[in-house]
Image 1: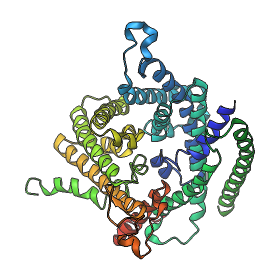
Image 2 (image 1 turned 90 degrees about the vertical axis):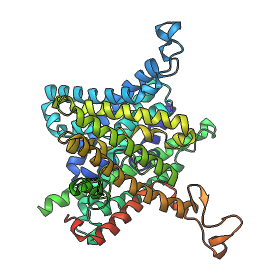
Image 3 (image 1 turned 180 degrees about the vertical axis):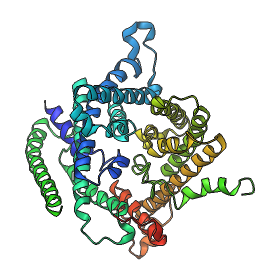
Image 4 (image 1 turned 60 degrees about the vertical axis):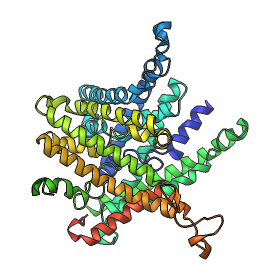
Length: 247
Length: 215
């Protein structure tokens, strides 16, 4: 249970997809002009990550890793197909995205209409492939943890795009130097937010601490995080109310 | 440039400045920023992308009449993934240390938006030679920005270039350090890359007012 909690907060705040490793920056910059579209894309990313990371974990475990084919029989135990992992992962992601698109269109047209245009884009979102590759590189030990990793890094990405969309809606009323308008200022704000997120690095102190100590700090800190999140959420709401009022 | 007609030369020269993939088209930022703390890694990344884009654009351009448009994204991803596996295996064989530094970011060339973007926008509709030039041009534009970021981050952050100290020795206090200069550790952390890109955009758009956004 503890390792789940630790991985959850670690992937949201410390190894945040956007602020720590810059994944999914293209769609992060392109689709963050309005909070409502940002929410749609963010939700789609969480969903697809939650599906593809566990699937790719299974692929990695039973097909690609060194000796993973041992379950076929002892004569296959020496095979190491890990050089194929890029092509296998991206094929899984592309097919899953198409499948998810078809299924969602059939069973939930309302959800399809809100996510619709973003789903095909997601196949080439680096955050999705990055999720699977980091899952492989960090050697996540179990299927449950892989699912957890997919969902929580998706939530981290969601938070990041939500925050930048809210800031960009606000910044329209500020007097930014013309050459920086639009893209330039977004980069700089993201950089500053990234520096802020670096401070979460002190949240989990790593494996060297005794388990009891890490237990307490994790729980206490996580409460603080929740409060901060609620603050961020209420800020976003305030922004969208302003928008409505202005209209 | 006698080899190339003026139109063809523009395919290479445009993306270097006024139509730069990173600062103007906002493509391919994903895998670009995390590895630019060192100049060497930036250069290797740039060369890898030039290779993948040049060959990839040729292949897609050759196949453009064969690929059914419904499954073209998957077909493109498979072509890029194959090329990236080649790059990854070569790096692992000849520059193992560097491939450790680049870690998953070599794999992430697959989802580099420049590559998919150029396939979609150019290689699917143009001949082989022009597609090749377009690929090389855009990859060069990407590489130039990467090398600029890498240059400043390594110089200001660690006082070295390609790992060779150029500003003197920070511990023995020689060179610049003897007059009180200190390395800026801030440039090493990942978010600094974003701020450097922001400043590059600022400089570029101040020099060319046509590029300024309205919003």
